Amino acid sequence: MSGSRILYVIFALALALLVVVVPLKTHMSGSSAIKGWTSLADPGPLSPAHARFQADCETCHTPHKGVEPVKCIACHAGTDFGTKASTSFHANATQCTSCHIEHDGGTSLARMEHKALLDPTLWRGPLLASNGQLSTAAPATVDALDCASCHAARDPHQGLFGKDCKSCHTLTDWKVAAFRHPSVNSTQCAECHKAPPSHFMMHFKMVSQRVAKSRAPVNQCVACHTTDSWNNIRNVGLYDHH
Image 1 (cartoon, rainbow, N blue to C red):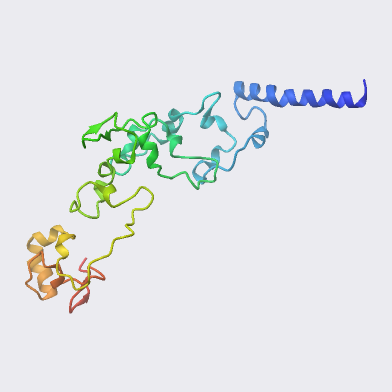
Image 2: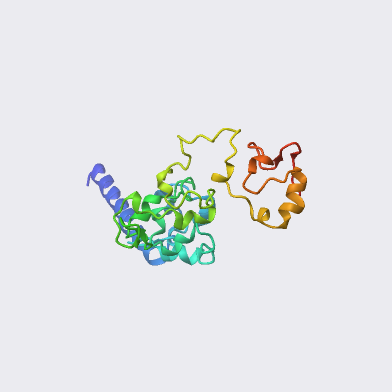
């Protein structure tokens, strides 16, 4: 047998070892069965939170199936997503990897992908139908998202603008490019801003009005407050009694 043929045989045996024996061995005994092999199939660094699993692929991956949600849940079962409206939708998620991507060093691990909520195979939560009612069979468009169901707890508008968030906001940027705050001389602050609960209690007369030296009613915000900071009281300056 010539030298070139011997090299081909050696190469064929090495290839068989790599393609057949290594996967079979690791499938039967785990990723630690053959030391160092994971470096040949490493698609990238894990996020800092998962870095300790870099050499233990089966912690997240299941042979022939990939990453299964049950393995994610096994580690994150103690995480309380239910008490925050903005994260409670996780209880209805069916596939973690639709939003959380690994092996990129963690740059997209916490990415919120709203479009994933439109896919019924990834999320079991209700969507808004064309008639405004909740439906699990709503068309997969942005209009089907019920924004207020997740963002109501942090509504900076305090309900004054209703629940149709998409009439002003987009999924990519909450800033409204066309918005311009009314003049600093505007006296109609209460049209957009609600007074805090303390202003509807005795605290308003006993503390707030005395500090501001004004007997203006609650809806006349401009009589006591300035527009640069709510704690900047007119003719008093920055004030914080807490």
